[in-house]
Each structure stands twice: as C-alpha cells, then as structure tokens.
Length: 208
Image (cartoon, rainbow, N blue to C red; front, top):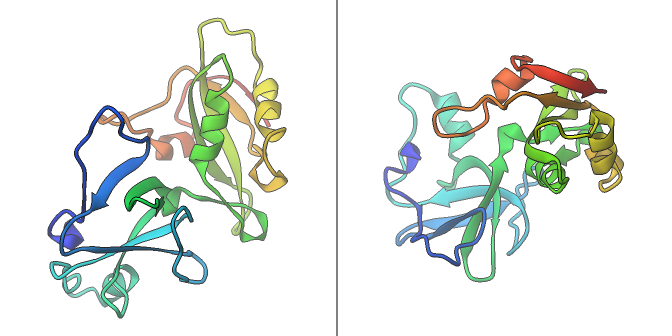
C-alpha cells in the first residue's frame, strides 16, 4: 500500500505455497494483528486486522487530519483495513477486507469467504460470491450469488439449506441465494460486489 512507501510483506511463490498466504514481513517492518472491537493484540492463528509499522510509513494525508487518524494510530501503526492472521512460522494470511465483512444481528461479523468455500463444496456450484444486503441501518443479511454447471439440476433453496445446515444461525444465508449467468468481475478477475449489491446481474433463479 502506498501509505508504507515500500512493500511491508513479500514472498517468493513456490509449488508448496499455501492458499491465502501473502508472505513474510520484510526487513525494517513490524506487523501485528489486533481484535477489531477491543484493539487487543492477537496471537498466531487468531483472525483480526493486520497493522503495519516501519520507518518509511507516511506522516499523514495532506490537509486531512481525519483520514490520517483513521489510518494511523498514535503509536505509528498503519491500520490496513485487511482482515487476516499469521501462523507459527511468521507467514501472513489475508482472508478478507474489513469493509467486506457482513455485520449481522448483535454486531456479529461474517467472513464471506467462509460461506463461499462452503458453496463451492457443492458439486454443481462453479463460482460463488457472498455479500451483505441491508436489513436495516444496523444489520445485514448474507446473500449468495452462484454460477452453476450447465443444466445443473439444483434449486436455490437446496443451496441455501446446504449452507444453513452447516453454520450457526447468524451466518445463515438469510438474504437468499441468487443463481446468476455470470459473476461481474474487473480486469483482474476480482468480483465487483457493488454491481452485485445493486442487482446488476442476469438472474436465472433465486430464493429468500
């Protein structure tokens, strides 16, 4: 990220590289993972916000104190907005962006990749993206958008039950399942969640 001036985490990709791993901390950089609610320091394998600190970190955004204070704390840690963890070997794993976390009832948070991975375990699902859709000002419901194999004999309700039977109540697909022709993506292959939230997809079937 440009706020660090230099890359803080780097890697050399090999055949045994682990999924979601983004590498190890580079020299002259520090990385920690903190709990989103309390700011408490987390240990290996515990998921929270990834924070980075180094001598090359920017001082702040020009003429924008509010943006600076929301990004860099009093101790000089840059709050990246990335959700992840580190393992016992010091490898860093990125699981999601904090802004993409789904805030369900009682302020419980759902990581979309967890539900997406479950959907992809179904034999007829080829692609899956989960987003939060607003229920009211304070709560969101997880909704899945899936692409199926051609002429797959499966209904949205079946996929909804497939996930709901495997997760706690607050993680269930209460926003429904939409079967779509394709998932909109940018040129890097990343799903365009704004378009999904706006319903800008060719819907083939759905359930709520």
